[in-house]
Image (cartoon, rainbow, N blue to C red; front, side):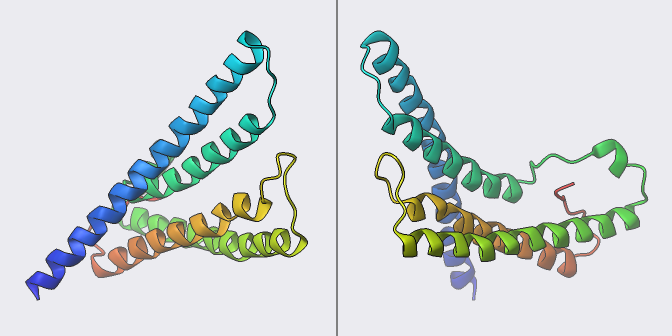
Length: 170
């Protein structure tokens, strides 16, 4: 039993490391492409269109994957002064409610994200740089699934250990 738990912990650590690195790499790559665009446009006087678009996709993908990292590490913004006005018992219920509301939004993101991706796929829409839009929009359902799983884990942990203070999205 302990060997299985150790293996699961290693898998979780690998997934979390991939998530951390991928988020950071996408954001840094997007910013690097924007810097390259400035060099091409204003220094070399060679205007391009693809760089702006690809940089935008990279940054959006990085931010949405980074949202999962923030949820995992409990670093989302919350209104602490409002939260502290309540007793510990009420704070637990606020945490549970906030996580259920967040889960509802993430499920919405999955459902409608898949619909958008399907529509872009079926129509064969492409960007002005000839990039397939279904690929660009696929981050919506993907991030919705990842964020939903993270939120379900938070809700499960709340159920398992009601005395443990859980962080929320507030």
